[in-house]
Amino acid sequence: MSLPPGLPSESLHVRYAETSSGGDHDWLPVISTKLYTNAFIISPGPPQKILLGYKKRGFGAHFYNGFGGKVEAGESPAQAAARELKEECGVEASLDHCGTLLFVNKGGPEWAFQIEIYRADGYSGTLIETEEMRPEWFSAADTRFSETSLTPEVIPPPIPYNSMWPDDIYWIPLLLTKLPFVGRADFDTDTSGRYEMLRWWFGVPSTSL
Ligand SMILES: CNc1ncnc2c1ncn2[C@@H]1O[C@H](COP(=O)(O)OP(=O)(O)OP(=O)(O)O)[C@@H](O)[C@H]1O
Image (cartoon, rainbow, N blue to C red; front, side, top):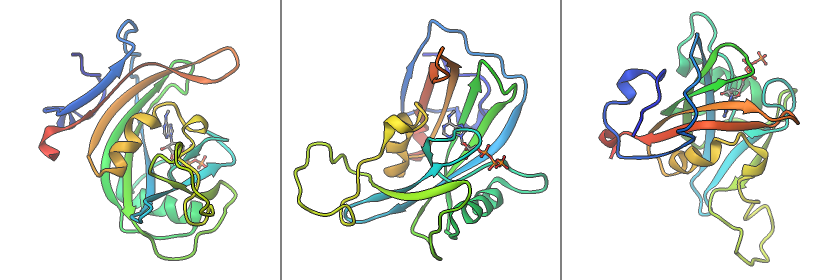
């Protein structure tokens, strides 16, 4: 098993479970890293639901994602996560740190994204659509095979992994089950500009069980 370089070393010492692929590619060099945040609101349900935002502009436009952005100078990641959540969908939440991810893009930007992931069971305030994000609820349970006459207000559509960053399907299930995680993915863009993962590794530290 080969652990990815570049992640904060304290997150890697013991592992319980992992998933990885792309071992025939070398990990891309990490020249520098920039800190980002990404925050997810979970409604415990039943049915369990997750709040995602449709990103209307900027990096990752047209993907659904959590709410987040760059950690500004003088801010802790937790402070940045709370600020970005409020800026992008208007609400406040008691956020718990639950994962650290590193993303490296072959075609640039030249820095690697170190993203601190947060989650909360609930929020206060009123959800609003902003210039950057349109918030929408999705069912956390896999509803692909369920036949139901219930309306989307009761059981919203399933998580739209096909319209999300390709790495999300590996760690969102860990976020939903409250298992802390670390991981790394290296990306390239194909001829039509789509991001594809060259190599990835995601794991759950065993100390968290
Ligand atoms: C590659 N795989 C990935 N998988 C999941 N999420 C990813 C991601 N890569 C970046 N992200 C997230 O994308 C947002 C970008 O933030 P971004 O809009 O650029 O930041 P910020 O709001 O500070 O920018 P502006 O000030 O508006 O320019 C930020 O939440 C960051 O966590």
